[in-house]
Image (cartoon, rainbow, N blue to C red):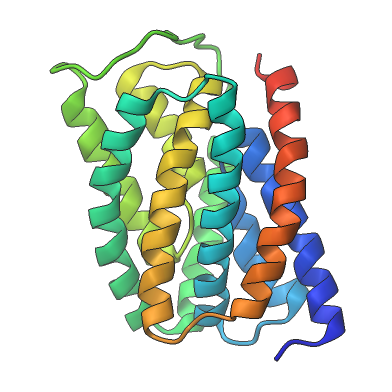
Length: 231
């Protein structure tokens, strides 16, 4: 059971998570897990991680449909990347559940710091919008997909903040296409992690529902903003 205050905070937090996913294709769980623990008040870190994985996967799927209608998803690259990453996400989630919850949150915080520092770097590459899977890039797509999937599963996060630059590195696609395509993997990784945590009873379904509802509204606003701010 969740209180009324937790429900309101969960809905508002979901809106923020959805907006982030729609805008930059990432930041969902980087925001969702701390919001679950420190704003909504979920005491058990593993429950916060499992619940946020469901919410982020659902929000990513909604945002993916919005981007797909805009024709910015490069499906061939995205599907191979996601398929490779699902294997890593499953293994990573098993390891994550074995680790002490507070220690996992501490490592999560370190990852957030590293991400913040990486985001300070200038992005000047324009990219190639007509990229396709080929013999020259498929090994990079599979390898980076497996790596990001493992990190995603271990920390219980969608991994969009890793997937976007990984797709750009592996294929050379532009940032807007990478943001859109990354949502395929975020959805797949989130569902894989969520299934693993749900199997262990580490999910608050009521809270996940509120997060998803808020995320749908936030995602629509984020997607519109992404199209205007792409460059």
